[in-house]
Image 1 (cartoon, helix red, strand yellow):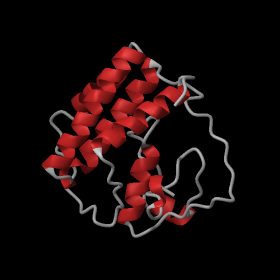
Image 2 (cartoon, helix red, strand yellow):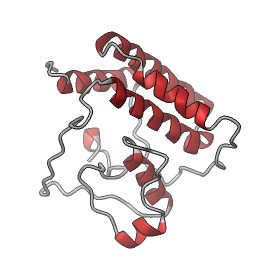
Image 3 (cartoon, rainbow, N blue to C red):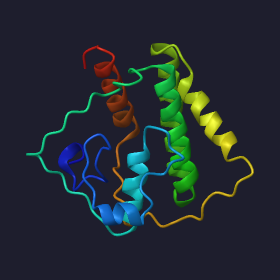
Length: 175
């Protein structure tokens, strides 16, 4: 379940997931506009919008090596994550309030500044800019109601603390 045990998760991690093949196919599978990272979040949103739900199965076991391909904090991993966040915002940002979009931008600004300092690269910024340019001149998809999509409300400081802790853990630090 999500942090704090508040309800079912939005969707499974793409690294350890099981889906209804019929629904997966009906929804078009993974969006190929995502090369890597956050394609599972996009699919989870589309599944929720189609009325599906997700259930955590604590007794199941899956092994997923975080950043096993590109390495934690690598410029390429950060670039792909930045591009993925940009694509999610392009697809679903029209349904978010200006306050929510601004809050996300503030979190990203702090996170990307941290990546500049800790990872010594601007990969995420580059990915966001590339994704923005990719959709330059395109009309954003029509806003859909995200009412059926569970949004985890986390205070700004808690969100940053979680991201910092996760980043340190995967980079070999403590915390």
